[in-house]
Amino acid sequence: MNPSLEASPLLTSAEAAVPGMDPAAVERWARRQMRVSPWLHEEVGSRMAQRLAWIKAQPSAWMSWEPVHAGIQAHRTVATAYPKARVLVQSRVGEHTLDVLKAAAPESAGLMGRWRYTAPSLADAGVAVDMLWANMALHTTHLPQTMLRRWHAALKPAGFLMFSCLGPDSLAEIRRVYALLGWPVPAHAFTDMHDWGDMLVQAGFAEPVMDMERITLSYSGSSALLDELRSLGGNLSSERAADSRGRQWLAGWHSAMEEHLPRDADGRLLLSFEVIYGHAHKGQPRIPVAQTSAVPLQSMRDMLGTQHRRTR
Image (cartoon, rainbow, N blue to C red; front, top):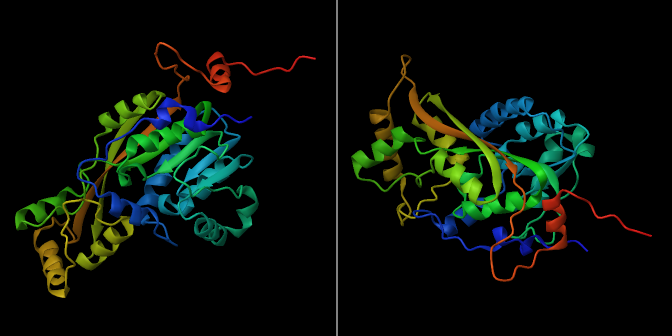
């Protein structure tokens, strides 16, 4: 019998939505069907993949979390790093994601396990992987602690998590322009890496290692900048403008960006992103303290580090 992952108290505890994020907007963005990954996500995924060289463990199975959003080429880089490992693909739009991955790399289709789930729960998926790869996903959910618990539940004991996300200094230049003009915020507030470290521990992860870097991109003009922003995600803030904006407002937006954003020596518009990288191992299962505690048999085996042996 496979124990249900929902039996874990870490997976079932309630979570209040992140203040300032619109759950409906989050859901719409999560179900979009992209065919091309954002350039920034590919770049961050490439940098995160370089960190795999620091890890001696060789996964026999790993999970790729929303690989089209995270970066198709980054997904292929990780698959190449672990050519013998089984690849489990998680996506809210599973069939579409697998079609995009196969179209991008038909020669490597045999390396990918045709696995996916579209349900909001991992309870019946029978998931057990040694590594979970989640590039640029954590800042796009209004329930990050729930996401962390799902990642934790999907990992084998001693499995590890690799993730990245945007930090609070991202889009600082555009936020200043919006504030100057009295416009609603251009994006929700992003979480600090120290808070992510605390949430990792609360979710059951051990030895979290966090670091960050700032990436500054330059653009030939406001049109190129807008194309980049549209590829990165919609405005998920509950404080965004409630009505649709017309051509006149869009023209004003372009003028504002051209006038107020900083420029480099060549006159190109500048926009910075704070990128947070995180790595953590799955900690040993914890028994909740209560007058009476029922511990699933598999959880007890994991805590003891032993395997059941049938006697004859």
